Length: 334
Image 1 (cartoon, helix red, strand yellow):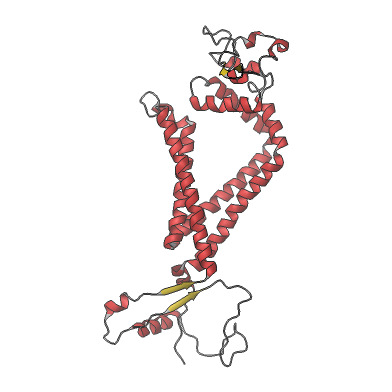
Image 2 (image 1 turned 45 degrees about the horizontal axis):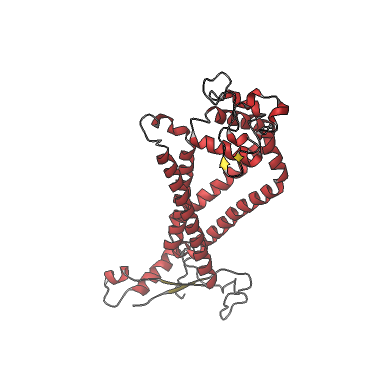
C-alpha cells in the first residue's frame, strides 16, 4: 500500500520552489489541463486502492507528516507557555477557593452576599485563565483546530477589551478620582466586617503611608471608629495609620490609633499620617507612569505576538487544517 509523505514548511521568501522541465518560473507552471478538486481527489483515492479492493485498508491508510525545525519550535514553545499560564491559573483559582472557604462564605448566613466578595472575582479569574490556557495547550498538543480557533478568538477579545478599557480610562480621567474616592469610602465603612477589604485597605495605608481617603478624619464614616460609637475604638483610626505602630520595634500595637480623631492636626501628626490615600495613589502613578506604560505595552505586545504565532500554527503547524486548505496531491497527467 502506498504511503504519502506531506512535508510542511514555512514559506520563507528565500526558499525557492522546484522548477520542472519547460518552466520559466517556479511560480508559473507550464500550461496544461486544469483539474478540479473532485478529479484530483478521485485520482488520489484511486492510487490508494489496494490490489484486493479492500475498503477497510483504504480507511486505515495513514498520512505521515514531517515538520521543519521551526514548526517544532513554534509548537512546543506555545505548549510550554500555555502550560505555565495554566498552572498560574490553577494557583489563582486555588487561592480564591481558599479565601472563600476560610471566611466561610458558603455558610447559610453569608451566602446571600457572596456576589460582592472579592475572592469570588479572584476565583473566577483563575477559572477563566485556566480554561483558556488549557484549551490552547491541548489544542496545540493535539493539533485541534477548533480549540486553537477558540483560543485565538479569546485572545483577540481580550486584546480588544484591554484597548477599550485604556481608551475609556483616558477619556474619563476627571471621573476616575471620584470613583476611587467612593470605592475607598465604601471599603472603610465595611472595614471591620470584610476581611478582604480590611486587608486591601491596610496594605494601601501601610505602603503609601496615608490614612483615609482625603484625610484621617474620613474614618468617622465607620460605625466603630466614629466618636459616637460606644466601643474602645471610638474616635480612633486603624493601626496602619500610625507613624510607628511597633512598640520598641518588635511588638505590634493595635491600639496606637485610639483617640486620634480627638487630636488637632499638630498633635496628631506625630502619631498618625494625616494625608489621605487618594493623593498618595496619584503621586505613586506620577512617579511610576513610565514603568506602568512599559508594562502595559509589553503585556499587550505579548498577547499580539501570541496571536501571530497562533495564526501561524493554524496555517502551518496544524496538518489537518493545512491539508484541507492546500491539497498537495499530484494531478493525473493529461
